[in-house]
Length: 149
Image (cartoon, rainbow, N blue to C red; front, side, top):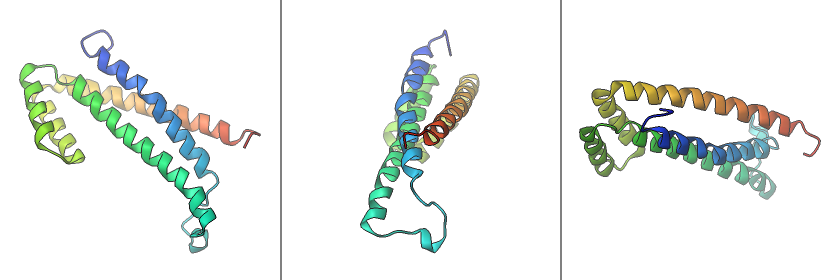
């Protein structure tokens, strides 16, 4: 992964973590001004309530979309080493329009043809996402407790 043919996919994955961190931090900052309790009194349908909620929702949706796109791009480019697997993955990608069904089929095909590559990608994703979330949470806590807000 670090020195082999998949290093380009790994570096692209790491490069794409920066916008994810930005949008997740924005969602934390915008969400800090919201009352996210589930009580009926916390729902604010006024213009001011919507004005406070929209930036939070957009930031959160962009983060989720970027996270899913980055992970799927990394998986598709990192595990398609054998030529026959590459053709199979290309066929699945073209035939299946639904994101989650396509990812399930891609994972199944990869597991059948390239178990070691699949485990390597899962391990890298798991470690990097846990580290990423830990860093973003600590940074957001520091930002929210600063005197600038």
